[in-house]
Length: 139
Image 1 (cartoon, one colour):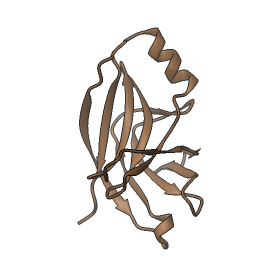
Image 2 (image 1 turned 90 degrees about the vertical axis):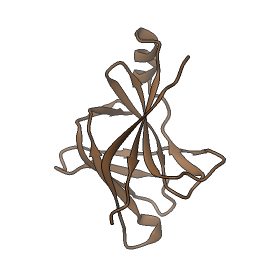
Image 3 (image 1 turned 120 degrees about the vertical axis):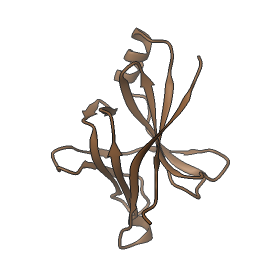
Image 4 (image 1 turned 45 degrees about the vertical axis):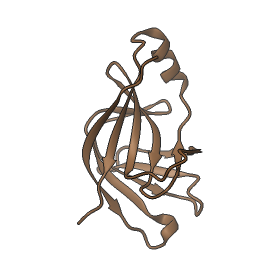
């Protein structure tokens, strides 16, 4: 299966918390996307660690009407990430949040493929793409 990486700059910025463990980030996601079995509308979102070790994250829309807790697994790349970014799997017009990476770290967070993602992957378009939404630090 071919994989393509598309870069989408999403006007995202880092939001500093009171402690290093609580540092989160935020940004505009320009398309509707799925986390687990929940579809979230395009818009401004913040991702904030809820636990001290970052094992649980809160993804919340700026209008506070959309929020979901995420409990991802750790993943490693072998090299430090050059940017803070979100990685999405894309099947046709369905976007699934897959990974979260922070600049300067070789360990990120990865969400398992949901049943919904696996069903969509088996139903149609055999081309699976990855879209990378880069997060830029504020100046």
